[in-house]
Length: 288
Length: 288
Image (cartoon, rainbow over the protein chains, first blue to last red):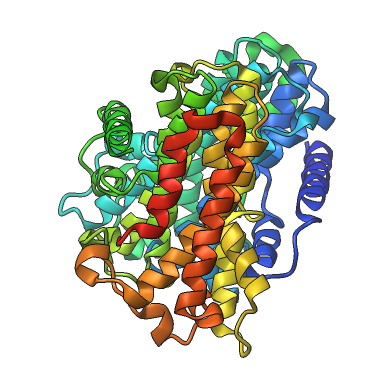
C-alpha cells in the first residue's frame, strides 16, 4: 500500500503543479499552494483505488482525486480560522491565517472550493459530460449544507449545547462532517466507470466512522510531535467524543469492528481490493 | 423593465424557496435564507433576459439565474466579515456575522458557493450535460482565483500598498472583482442556447465597469438611507477610486459613455434587447 500511496501522492502533486503554475505570487495564490501541499492524501487514494478497480486509468482519476483534495483543503483552511476551531498548527506547520492573515485564509478557502468544482470539468478526466455532472452534483450534495457544512454547523451547535451529544447524534454529525466526503471519494471511481458505487459506499461509511473514532483516540493518546496539531483539545473542552461515550477500549473495539465491516464490503472485488483493505487497517493503526 | 425585473425577482425567490425548503432552522440554514433574500437581482435579470433573447424559457433560465445570485450572495457574506470589509449593514439589514456570528457567516458563504454549483446540475435547467459543464467551468473560472477572488485579493493588496492604483490597474481589478460575474450572467443564456455569447459579453464588460464607477460615485454622493450601507468609506480610507482618478464629473461622463457602448453591443438583437439597454441606463441612474 505504501508504494501505491506514494504514487498517488506524486500524481496528485503533479496535477496541482499543472493547475497552480499559471497563478502568481499574491498571498491568496501562495496560500493556495501552501494549503494544497502535503497531507495524507487519503481521499485521493480512495478515488484512485476505486477507479483502478473499475479499469479507469490513473491519468484520468487523478483529476477527481485532486478535486476532493482541493475541497478537503478548503474545509481545513476555513475550519482552522479563529472564529471556527482557532488552530495555529496544521500538519506541523502554521495554519494559513497564521502564516498570512484571516482575510487571506477566507479567500484561499473560497478559491480552493471553486477549484474543486473546476477540476471536475477538466478534459483530462476523460469521462462523458453526463458523468461529470453526476460527480459535480454529488460533490455539491456531500460538501454543502446537506453534507459537510451541516456537520460543521452541528459540531459548533454541540459545543454550546448544555447536554452532550448521544452516540447516535455524534455518529450522524461525523457522518456529515467527515463521512460524506470520504464516501464521495470511494464512490467516484465506480461512478466514472458507470458501475454500481454501492459496495464502495458501504466500505466508505464504515471507514469514515472508524477514521473519526481514531481521531478521537489520537486526541487522547496522540503525540503532538507526530500528529502535528494540538492534542487533548476535545477532552479539555468537555466535548462528547467517541472516547468519552464508549471509553478508550470501547472506542478501539468499535473502530476495529468497523474496519472488519469495511473490508467485508469489498468482497465483490476479491483480492484486487487489498490496497483498500490495507487503508482501512492503516486508518486505525495510524499515529497522525 | 420594472415589470420584467419584478417577474425575475419573483421567479428567483420561488426557486430559492424550493431549494431551501428541505433545510432546517440551524443558524447556517437560516443564514442562507437571510443572505439569499432581497437584493437588486441584477445578475439574475441579465441571465434571464440573455436567455429570453435566445428562446430559452424562464422556467429553465431561472435556475442559472439563481446560481449566479447564490454565488454573488456568498461573496457578499464573506466580503462583509470583520477580517475583510468589516461591514455591519447590507441592504439596510445587519450582515450575517452581526445577526449571528462569524463562524456562521463563514459557513453560510461556503454553503452558498456550493449551492451555486449545485443549482447548475439541476434537471430543471433543461440543457445538455455538455452545456451544463460549460456553464460550471466558466462560473468556476469567473469566480475563482483567476476571477472574482483574484479581484478581491487585488483590492486588499491595494489597501495596504504605498502607491495608489492607476486607472488601468483599478479597471483590471474591478473587471475581476465584479466584472467577471456580470459577464458570466450576460453570456449564460447564449451558452444555454448554444449560440455565440460574444455580443452579450461585450455588453457586459462595459456594463460591469459602468456599474462599478456608479458604485464609486454613490460612495461619494450616496445617501446611507437609500444605499442601505455606509457611505464615504472608500474616500475616508484614501483608496483610489474611479472618482478619485477621474473626478466626479469625469467619472459620470465615463459611465455614460460605457452605457452607450453597452447598448451599441446589443445591435444584433435589435429592439428585443431593449430591457437590457434599460438595465444599462438604470445602472448609472440608480441611487442604491
